[in-house]
Image 1 (cartoon, rainbow, N blue to C red):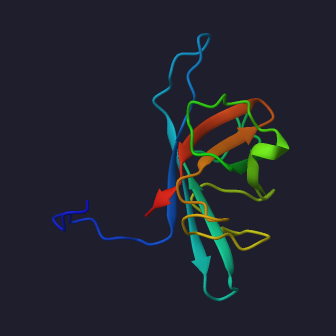
Image 2 (image 1 turned 45 degrees about the horizontal axis):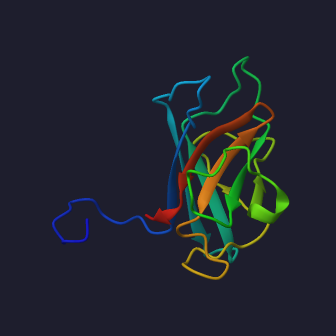
Image 3 (image 1 turned 90 degrees about the vertical axis):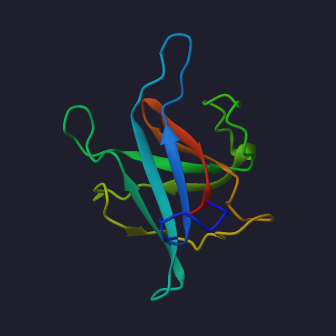
Length: 139
C-alpha cells in the first residue's frame, strides 16, 4: 500500500503472481503461482524462486521455463512466445523444487524501463503450453 498504513514489510526484488489463462475451451482456474526474483549479492547475479508447484501431473519433474516478454499486456495471446516478443527466457533447472531459490545464468535488470522487467508480462511454460501468466512488479 502506498499510504504507509500497510503492516506488510517489503521483501525487495520483483514478484509476479501467475494465473492460468482462461480460454473458451478452458474456464479460469483458481490456482496461482508466484515467481520472485532478487539480486544475489554473493554472486552479483539474480536468483529466482517459484512457489505453487514442483511436480508434473504424473509426479515427474517439471520441464519448463519462464518467459519475460517485452510487453506488459495480459490481453496478448498466451501462445505469443515468438522470439521478437521475448526479453528473457529462463529454463527451470532439472533439480527444480518449489520454494527453493536457484541462480539464473545471467543477471536481470530488476528495474523499470530499458531492459528492466517491472511491468512486463511473465509466462510460465511447459511442453503442454502456458501454465500461468502475470505482470512483474516490485515486491
